[in-house]
Length: 432
Ligand SMILES: [Zn+2]
Ligand SMILES: [Zn+2]
Image (cartoon, rainbow, N blue to C red):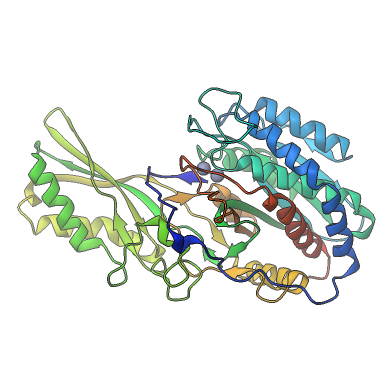
């Protein structure tokens, strides 16, 4: 999960001690294949924790995931999976074929760690100075390996084929593109799925159709003369007044609100549904006689994006800075994770059927500040990206990605293996 700007998160208030919905109780009979999946997953509960801790102790930065690849390869080969290592880097794809008719379903896990040196109050700390799994990709890899193991063990009951894509360089937003340029097109995948562990209660799944994150654009303004601090402040205020949009009295840039039951993502009246804001303060520097300003803009509505630059020009043209403005442009813009509406609906239905009514928490808003290069797969292959809880609020373990106190409740490993193995099994069936 790529963080597009540093932010401050304070996840300490008692208000956070809640669950988005009561975890569904499953009173109905679980189909035999899913009973087998759950039993196989239960058997590897301790192993999952061991795998995660090994990965956590040996994090590698984007583009340097060589040891991680070797570790994954060993496990996948031991499971009897075919492996593809020609991935234009240190990625690896494990392929599980059932030999029976069905669809080709992919699951993606990212591999890279962060260049951080935060305190990590666990016994299995990083052994690499300045490198940490502070975004939870160790959790993602462990869940994916667990799924591969569970499905391999139950192969005879399954149909179709499964592709476990372990992808490098997510944080730098280049890994998915590298894989798509090389291997993925040749695999003719039917559907792709993936998750990101985040600050909800461990084991909770949250999803929505279409965009999961807001669109982020880095806006650059160039002026033909240098500007003083007051002028820069005035310009940012003018643009804020002219461009920002949010629900009355709401502050969608306050990330600690995303889990609030009344205004957070899970409420259909969420403040994260429709907004646009620009980060303050702008970065400012001069180049020769030119003044250059830049900031990040977050917009939920794709249709409003083409209007942004003309609006900025219009706002400034009507101000005393109009004659000084020489150019406005986006200097960084990425696509965003965009879930296939039909597959999202089917995934919710499948998980609710197996694990209980209203098991999956529906999201209604878009998260600012983050993005994931999973978006690039979705341009080629219909797919769904889930937010997956890793926090334990009672114990004060908050899985807020990139935050200094990032901490994961490892119970989410086993839950993740069960739920998403069940999902892939159902999706690979030929009839669905
Ligand atoms: Zn990240
Ligand atoms: Zn991440």
